[in-house]
Image 1 (cartoon, rainbow, N blue to C red):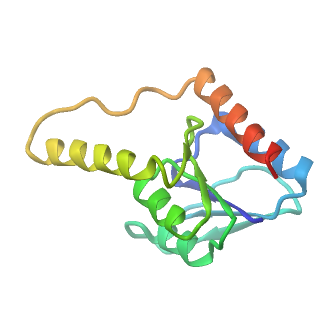
Image 2 (spheres, rainbow, N blue to C red; image 1 turned 180 degrees about the vertical axis):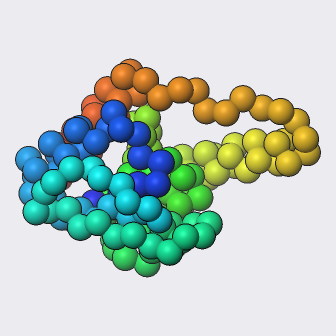
Length: 147
């Protein structure tokens, strides 16, 4: 299994959590972004910077991701593409996306996008908190306990 991190919007609170997991499991990891993002130093991490542009990191992750890999991302369309490749996806707040729930998340995301495009002012996502980091850590540990 390879771990992929969609790093363009990766919360700083998660960096020590993910680094400990990478080291503990000797987990091959690819951190992919369109700018320099440092998760930490590890022989198991490869940093890949893709060209600027919408969804360039996402396309690269999908291209490299294989059956059974894990992707950490808050990007629901990317998670949908990953799930369709029979891989796994966890968001920054600890939600494990699956075949059973990804279409519901995608529909809600698309609905909110349509509402915003119509000129309606909506609230953005709530601020990322220690509680969110804790939920992520719990989900990550539960995920790896199954393997």
